[in-house]
Image (cartoon, rainbow, N blue to C red; front, side):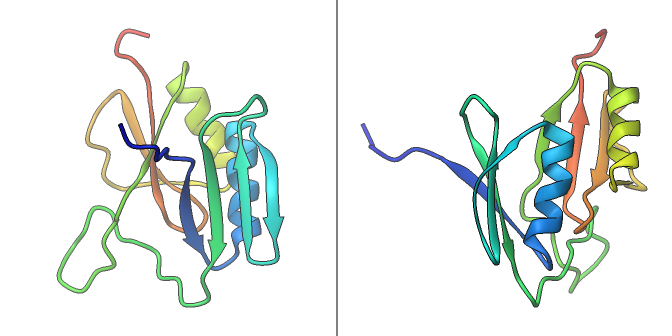
Amino acid sequence: MPSARLSTVVLDARDAHALAGFYLRLLGYVIRAEEPDWVLIGPPGGGTALSFQTEPGYVAPVWPGRGPGDQQMMLHLDIEVDDLESETARALAGGATLAAHQPQSDVRVLLDPAGHPFCLWTQQGS
């Protein structure tokens, strides 16, 4: 059995602290550690964290990919919510933008302030 454990997912941005602030508000997380160009946030009671790293040459991904040479999405976050409509409105008020392409009725694809796609989703019938 490996002794490796996933501890965090790191997202690059032009401003790590600004993007961390967006996710702090969206998820209700707390800052666990920070440096001038890096921030680690996570749930108050422990659990998998998110990190943000300043990358001066950061280029936002394109979703969905439109053509050759587009900066492709390498990953996205899926965030389960109880009320898709109200949490979408809250994310938009916090600085997210709604993606033009919405592939499913029980999922909302949004872009965070740095352009990373993320999905809010709910169980159908919830």
